Image (cartoon, rainbow over all chains, first blue to last red; front, side, top):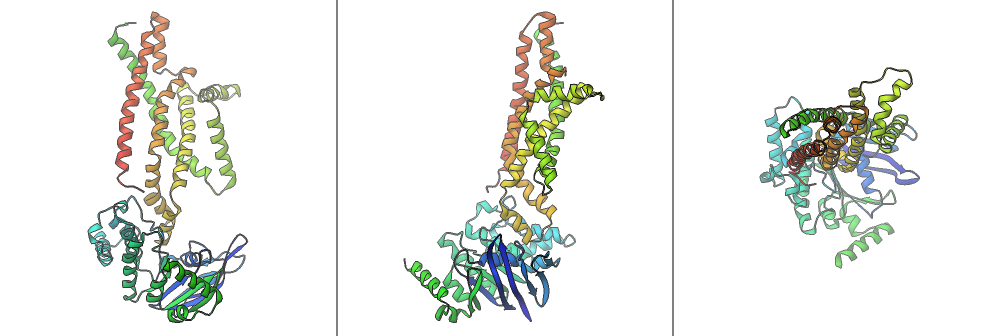
Length: 253
Length: 216
């Protein structure tokens, strides 16, 4: 069964069509990278999948169940538990500054699972902190740790709710280059847990190595989609060719 | 009237009790009322938003002293039952300060990054939990400094209630001019304001410090 099916998703901001009939599917445990120039619609697509934007038209299915469907001119239908089937890690981390690392992880779960013992939730949080290598920072506030560590906390926070599909919105774009490695390593370790993930990224090498599938988006449409070897090795669309040569050029200088 | 230092001090202290009463009642009402006005002025329901913004415009655009006079004398002129001096004072001060507070709150709320709301949403938190567990604390921290300013101003604004005959400390001080022909007790009232606002400054700064355990 497909972990995720996206059918004909469209989104307009005023007159600007940001997404035009976007469709793709993901198998369970697959990692999808979405690449493309700024303004191509990658982030909007991710935000639609997390319902931060409401797509104007289209359907989103998780494991065959319709979680979101919208028709032009009608109010979109979104199921109650749709939100928690997806998790999102933001470019700017968006940790809660007034809570320490541990509380950042446990806050939402404690509010949601009022009957689960506190200790059990905190134990799970500590396990996840260990996984991202930050056990010793549990009592620190976000402002006391580095950007890379903050992003790792944000990943652990998203994992607390055990989303079926974990999304990353340019997770390393706000980081100094020397801090991106630690975050990418954590994401890579999640792949070995067989977790379904969607990553919007500018890290081409990473996309090439970690993904099972890559989507190149330009002007709101999926310009090209395929396995990383094909897509990076023998790009077909002229826009992708231009994009890749620009990226290579940028990397050389 | 005894005009020795101790008697004057005790007498003025009585007047200052009335001043503090205006101060406390105003804060007690204006702090939550301001939040309601703030929500109203940010409401998606246009008539409510328009109404609240007009109220804030009128209250902030006219002198507090004039507002006191209108609230105290206005109802009588229209043939309604007038408010007592105390009532008129508390109503005017509370509404006036609530309007100023509402603008401070609004600034604070609008200043919380959108990412905080979005993080709450993707974590499946309810609107209520989002506001009370995440946003409010960040707003409070942002507004302590401007609120401190208003609170200190309120200490001194209470003296305006004298215009409709509220017996506060300035009124008590002026009695010595009328009855004894001495001026220094009125000057001396300044010391009471100074000490009180000094105490408040220390207290508010402590609160500010307590809340700056984190950086944004």
